[in-house]
Length: 236
Ligand SMILES: C[S@@+](CC[C@H](N)C(=O)[O-])C[C@H]1O[C@@H](n2cnc3c(N)ncnc32)[C@H](O)[C@@H]1O
Image (cartoon, rainbow, N blue to C red):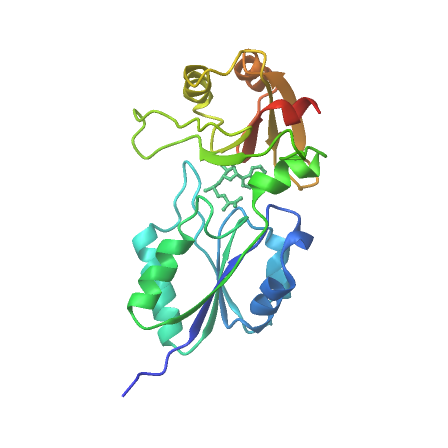
């Protein structure tokens, strides 16, 4: 006999502005009996939960892990087994440089019903919130979303041959990102920008070139969360 269990909604909370979640994401939060949330999603989204909803912060940042990934998986499973409608609220899109897909796979393997609700990723919202398009008809025809940090700190950073590159998690490792871009043949004159806290009230942009972006980021004290945009779109 199939055991009755709850359902887990893996919800993209958007990049920071609480209005940049989808309607479907809001509906999942409103009906949830339990919400497990990260630091990157807006805390205002939790106001949409019903009063009886249990809210658990499982946030991870560079320096602080309130819960390890294995514990988050186990907790999601436990809450779903309690016949609850569980929302797993994640920053941006839940599958872009996020462990949402691992969480979904873990739950599906254990027979839990999972629905993924995509979100607006910071990789796109960051540049667009400052009016920077990622593509241009017949001119800029490819975009790559790249990690600026790998689990192995010694591993080379990727710099795929796309017209526009968006690096996430690049602030602390900017020198290695620049090295990868130079090795891929990009000139020091390539326009670049860091966008910090995109779509939040205190978001800002620091524009430079590949040759100057590291110094400009230091001078302006750029801090995570920030996305780095590389390519001609920055100066357009
Ligand atoms: C673990 S990744 C999660 C990405 C997320 N899933 C997304 O789709 O935006 C965290 C990185 O996303 C980027 N990020 C997330 N929110 C941001 C924001 N509001 N402004 C700028 N960058 C952001 C930063 O590069 C940050 O280090």
